[in-house]
Length: 635
Ligand code: PRX
Image (cartoon, rainbow, N blue to C red):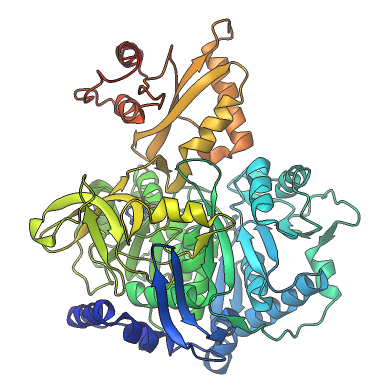
């Protein structure tokens, strides 16, 4: 939306100042440019001590009218989604705004016909195909709440997410090809459903011609369902603070957290940041390579771009198939102008011959983006030199599942960039650095480093953790009074630019995926030979971080270590999913512990990173001798 866009650095500074001094005025001006059935009574109501955050209270809307209906007047024949299949020989699909509007309305009636009503939870476990976008928007159209589970998660992980939010309906596909390998999604669902009794029906999209096992009375095919209903579906009128979706993210302890996002604020936040950060122009072709199963896909493949009337690319495959030039081939073929990916992908691609880049014409590119983890200097330069040919600004966008939208990021072509820096906060975002004692570090002390917190709410902040408001409060609002704590550390230079240094809790970002170590440890502990274990991250050239497990076994175990390692990783694949596989597993005779019995991960993190020169004071440990033993046999 051009009307939302900042067009100079001077304007950015003015808007930023306005957003801090008068957030209600600032956000109501922006929100006024969306379609509402009724405007809000109050822009913002908040109390971080509860915590309670409400944006646009009293307003009525449907987000799909903003993504679809609103565009029918001027953009009906514009391509909304370009779908690029895994196999380059299969045809792409181009879906216009009008076609998408019809498909969403049609499938919304399928949901209704399956008994789904406003407020019901629907689980989507799907590959990257347009039907995933259609299903999520169809939920939003009738006021149902979608919970999308990344289709690489195991059946156990799927079942626990279904159970946590008591989803009634599951939508999936029979099979999908990613790279050379077929993945049987329906089989994963069948296994999950043995332990997820809330699901009454399963709708299966037939992505391949392979035979699919169907359970009579429970499972039906997508196309058969469409035949039963008509294509017109009025949008359900929703409150701004009604739920739009639940999306699970890893926590440092316990089960994944179902982050709850509500309609009005999320719509305004995701669209405003999309339009500004990328400076999207009406004929641009925008491609975010993330999977819709993550927040990046929710906000920046679907909701932000579609609300802004953009053309958004959805890619089913992987960067390495049929070869490591696939991304660049697609950029060339579709004349992509905006390319948004993760540092882990950049590092992986940078290892392959430049000829794979050079044989494609990348001159359509205008803006490059990065998200998911800190981008290291080398990757930044490779991206800038070889992909952007030094003429495309790189927007290094820092944000989280919890924040719903970008928080700290350059505005393309407007904010001066600095390699490895996410640079400046976007309007409406008030980041602060907190020192060891819990005090705010004044800007005058720059350069400085500390824990990153945010002072006031922004529209797309998650409102709670589904079913566990106390955990929401404890995790984000208890570390520092009256602030949202991000869990990240950051460095700030003298001009106010932020560089995110990484997590300060027990979450490890592996290949851009946010993995809590606790569920992985739980999986390892299930092995009958294992007494206990600790999992930490260590730096890895491609993945950013990889996982290292320190494991103790029972005395009488005679199984060879390599066999045990294999079994442990198999267990993790089964319980958490293949994305959580361990790179290193070290068998140790004990773990370093405090006197209260807490495992000292700080020490293990240093050993795993091969940085043992300064382990700090270990004399207070219950078992200081163990540290030397672990160091000696480190992998
Ligand atoms: O540690 C930060 C890292 O990813 C975390 C959020 O992960 P998730 O909720 O899965 O969302 C990822 C996509 C938004 C953050 O707490 N992170 C994300 N973007 C960046 C980043 N670290 C450094 N630079 C970034 N641009």
